[in-house]
Length: 498
Image (cartoon, rainbow, N blue to C red):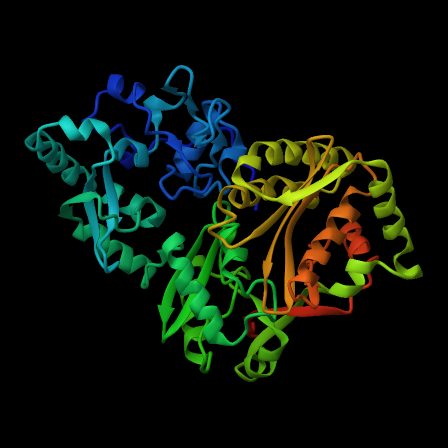
């Protein structure tokens, strides 16, 4: 998912020229709202198009700030002086922007904003009342500025730029005053996308959870859980569309669109799946990226009968919770010995995670990532390390809202490990994230055993630790705990013509 970005800036397009500003820069530089965000995955963080990313990188921003060189929301960085996050182009101490003169269209438009209407059928231009400057600005001045912007937003180059990058258009917000409709943008979007997808936001989680439950597939694989997907939403944008009564979830990667789950409904998948593949072909063009992941084996006969091609993916590892809580017998001699060493030689405290632990967990994560980088030369594993940071940030910030249970392990008052997980069903606990200090032998084994003991005490019978991501070292670690099952899941693609 990490993509290299060219250092040479692309030519500036007509749409990306500087737009007139209603709010003077002096007011922006003294504002404590813009460029700052309370959450790492804020849907309001600015979006950069491919040309804008190239220009920003040429001006000194790190390529890691942009998960997708073809266009992405910027990856926020923790505020070292506070508890929130800010755009990496923003310099909090000076209150200035490193790319202000060539900031992206998304930033140039503000405090005006592009958004869908409540029914997600028309694109609107609105005025965001969250901007403090707008509170005192005379309404007639705002409307004169909006009229000028409407003219610019109707230009073909601008319309095409917005249509190529639908993430420039936000979801409907009740606190944004609607100024006018943008019919040309709407028409061009429908012509390009046919079914413009909706960005997956917090308010969509109950809808996704209900759709998973309705499908009857909850508990089959770790992916049949809303938190599992939302954790990656900051890095890998998720979208959804209703097709033939099914909720169809899409993810937008640097190589194109795919479905992380098959259509979710309690009836035949044939119609929604065929239309979903039709949309992906339209969005991706020819190529193998159009696919459906997270297909449980029980759907294989029906999908094969429909003519789809199925391929196996790395299985998820499932263990007996009682066995891992006890670690009895020769099979677990090594893990038991390390746990006993921690208990004997170290003053260990394990407590429930709280958001106040976020900074300490972040510090441990950075130490752990540096340790892994030093030991690992595999480029794929290095990419996974870089990509994982955003998922951990979301877990630290939103564990409670995502119904994730976290544990923090301390020794001598210092965080040396943490873990997050959730219930796949009434009997299966899924370990979603786990980080420990690799310089302390046994910390990982001890924290994992305590996680299994807690799950067992709450009625859990099985522990799911996800797949091994194709990494040999991780596979060896998982096999050492003697799984009782390996839950196979499949990738579904359209059969290629001879």
